[in-house]
Length: 116
Length: 112
Image 1 (cartoon, each protein chain N blue to C red):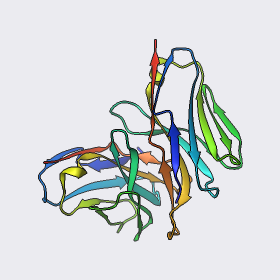
Image 2: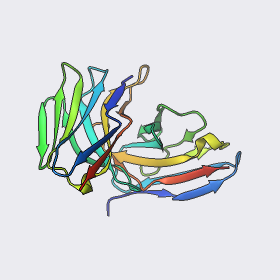
Image 3: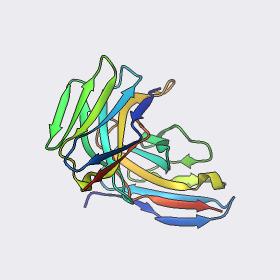
Image 4: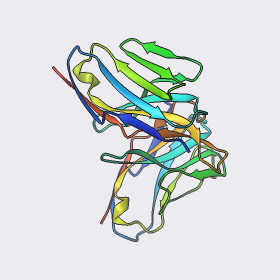
């Protein structure tokens, strides 16, 4: 099955600086890579996703890049604000060995803190 | 309003007392799944389902059961809860594996 690793586990930045979170995956057949944001005490919510036929996607201050050859993808947040403070999870689609069903595999999360 | 609901939101129980956490979605989604969230371990998938009567194990299925008799409902059953199942549980649904997952509000379970 797929293995997703996420780094760093914690990240502190000054307001206005950029933040980058990186994930690697193991299954070359994976073709969908979402990012979820979880604010304290809330449920995870999708903030951006990318499919394997695209190398980069932007949505205002956030962007995701995908390098299929190297099997890694990254979340970039520019001009960070205190409200960006949250836990961010990356994920990759895949299939367990012996199963025909697809599923999502999540990284362990990155706690981002933006200091004013 | 499109949503995923879970009940109960909070539950304190004792070891060995069977319990069910319900999950329901009103978006006609085929894909549903259960996760548990523990500090430092992220979101770990317990079970998932691609459609009615189609389920499969995730990363941590031991001690849990699920059923998918109707498209909208995906209950999580703990036949004999143990303290190591104390956790925050999320149900999620989506159109498919490669689509946005909508999470329920979470169920905080404590097993004494």
